[in-house]
Image (cartoon, rainbow, N blue to C red; front, side, top):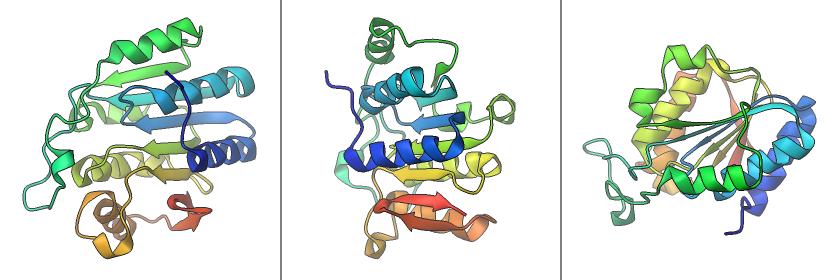
Length: 196
């Protein structure tokens, strides 16, 4: 399997790490096969030895969407289920499953705790949100809010066009931007936002 993030994601990742001096934490929400996660881990092991990487996944596929929020049939509960072992094997084969690289198992509603937040090495440099649904995305955004700083880059893998603002990641982003003190500006690509 080829481990590589999408081109716009790799550019944003490299910019975030380069601008930070390479110290802090990178997070991915929705690891699945580990294609981008393993690539992030490779980059950190080679170029950014002072960074941490955290990956979050239930390994049970997508959760049920919030009642009343539209959802595309491809985002049915249980879709995109994958086994954690595939990502572990890739990390181990490459020799990069270290203390700086961690996988957190479970639904975001169960794992995104204040206790875990207290263990995150700040600043939070880069966040890859590949969690498709409104419910998952709003849980992540609310949890990372206090970890953000000016310059953090957020990449929304499944962000819909502004005219589709009533569902998915777009709805979550719009709601969170009303709730938070942070401002987010489109940065280089329509799915990439920089926190200001």
